[in-house]
Image (cartoon, rainbow, N blue to C red; front, side, top):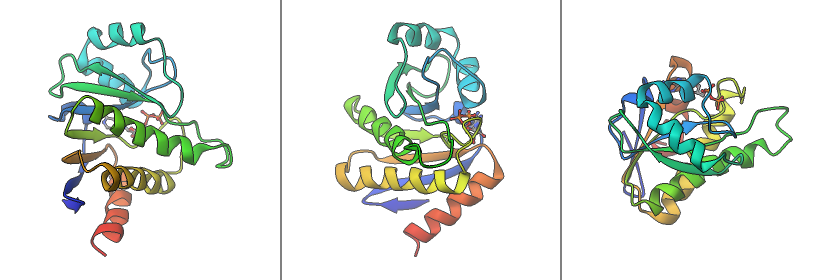
Length: 177
Ligand code: ADP
């Protein structure tokens, strides 16, 4: 566990759908109508009420965030955000990924949510290089924490060992240095 500006930051290797937090974040696509990867896992675990709410919302631009309840999962809410598809790194990917994390935290604050779990947004089928993505993710979260001092606990839930190691190295460097 790491601490930054009184907020706890944890890295966990596992399945985000099992997290008992106020909100888990979904790496969704622009339609919000479900997909593969973590999106598919969240809709499967949460059940059809999530899709019903997503249909009413009607989509989400890249870098923005929307919220639904979490259905059958132990968390209270799902914050659906859309990360960028990685092309060549010069198509605004970094800012869009940063915004996806930052806007998810802003929405959490609006809903008075204090504990939140993130997956490694865009590092699956959207193909964002894992190390660069982890650098952006940790920077966005730390920027928010430094500015707002509201969220009590952040979890980065990494599905794969390689992403877990990457986050560990980056956070060791940034926060245990
Ligand atoms: P994107 O389209 O944003 O790339 P993906 O779902 O394809 O989204 O992948 C994002 C990350 O989520 C990948 O690192 C993938 O390994 C991870 N992932 C897949 N399933 C889960 C899960 N159940 N819990 C946490 N992370 C997951």
